[in-house]
Amino acid sequence: MTIEDLVNDVLLGEGVTATNITYNGVSASDLTNSAIGTFLIENSAFPIAEGIVMTTGPALQITGENGFPPSNGVQDDPDLMSITGFNMNDCAILEFDFVATTDTFLIDYVFSSIEYPGFTCSNFNDAFGIFLSGPGIDGPFSNGAENFALIPN
Image (tube, rainbow, N blue to C red; front, side):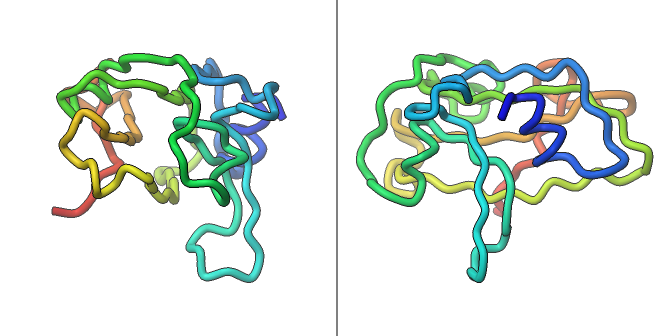
């Protein structure tokens, strides 16, 4: 799938139009090493049945080997760096503008990491954010965004 297909056909539902879709990470067209892809889990206790997976290594390895993935070469996202206080390596960044026809926009997500919690607050620290900016939002991140992907406490 193209990045546009991933956003419009998998991530977003009806009533949402996405534009200016960009992805920074190992390309979805590199099927062996891609850091972004789709998943479908049937008959499982996993809380999300289908969607997009984004990783610091190959997306094909999310259910298999637990080693350190090869570098995808994308470095130093300023918003993720501000969360951790460290330089970032191997980022997978998906950005888009959207217009929703309703007053509610919902994204279900799960953060998972082989480095969490064992390397938390070290220089090996995976980070995740959902940064939303737009009218009425005045946050501390790029373009006045707020991070809506927070771990309680």
